[in-house]
Length: 344
View 1 (cartoon, rainbow, N blue to C red):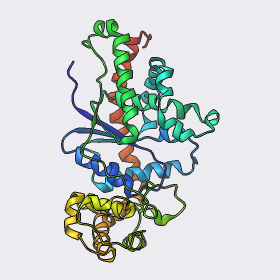
View 2 (view 1 turned 90 degrees about the vertical axis):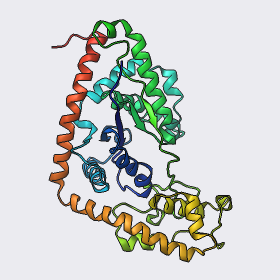
View 3 (view 1 turned 90 degrees about the horizontal axis):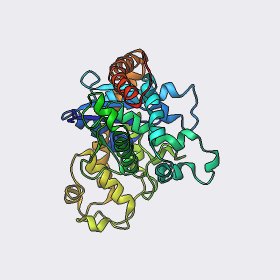
């Protein structure tokens, strides 16, 4: 069975979107819409696998949506919605809970990392999160998902679930006129090495919203003066910039800032080094400030404008939710028939 090419991806609304989210995910989403039909989801059901303040979650959901729009995602050309508006995500996740095997979930390293030593007190939702992710993707029978290193294992699980569903219900699938398979084996979309943005205070740690120092990250809502101040205060070393990437080894802060510059300039680390070889960080940081402000200040300004008009953001989510639900409902009707549920 041939599947129409379709991209699905999502971002959790956990607040304080930063440069790492922008370079690692959102800019890729914007680029993909030129080549594919895309569905972009604010995954608020995933967010509550750990406790979220009910007063903050709507604000965070709207902030992620505003970031999508401010960065250039077109909600008319694509579908932009929040996950909880489409009940079929949870409904299909239950079917997948019954298809997936305990051994598969026990191998998921991200649960072990997030739950830490106190796993007995982690939510069942956090443990079963990968089956909901599979439902997110396969409710639309998406063929491609842009993935970072931390999600590759979950996409493999999605493929395993799709394969097992297709095998378990092969006869029923054929009887209901769906060809030999119902779900695609979704492929990862890898567009070169993803930008891994590290803390501005410690080049060995990922940039994170949970870092107590706001100077460790550039938030997408930061204005030009704040961006400039954070870059100027970013940790560096006393040596000038090298001419080759090998010269950045054991210099994590230098490598991080070079990587940020290259990503914002849509160039490579090698090209950036040719431009700044032998320069002191004072010179390089001035150039990085100019570039970062030029790229990020318009995003912050547009997010601010959109945040002042939550009604418009909610209209985008409602429209996207209705369009997404129409697709997911058709998938779920077929799944119920294939599994053997009696429905109206």
